[in-house]
Length: 169
Image (cartoon, rainbow, N blue to C red; front, side, top):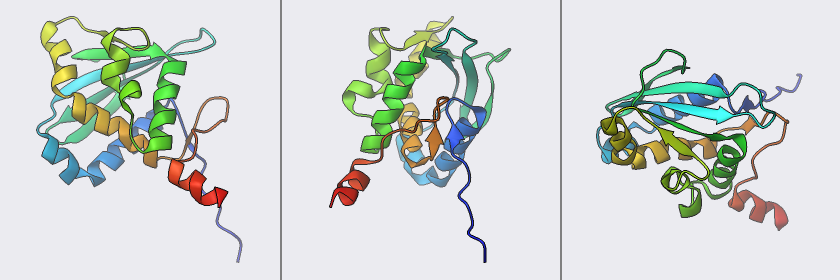
């Protein structure tokens, strides 16, 4: 019987990556329901390291669910979180290694001074939604610790600390 090969890793950034996060969120409905209603549409803009076009996605949340993942073009958003690929990668690497973002790599910290990630918004109410739903948004991104994904150069985020400790024994 031939060996079954594992599916290829998801790519970050990609629509498939965010759709996989959506599916992981749906599997954790109880966890998200404890955080409260989560109604916002926001954009994610990842600038390319090579100066190419940024990867842009719109994520739509209603109640306790991510109900839409689409291209950012033409979508009315409450806010857009944007920044260089390196900043997103650092956050995702930390999440993958630790199982969740640490304080230094949370969206709240990374956007606070606008040095690594910036928040763009047209309406102060939209900006307020980032902070009102910050815990739910962070929990959504923290689900990436469960995903098998690779970056455009083929590299992968670091293994979880528990996995590294087991393999060192």
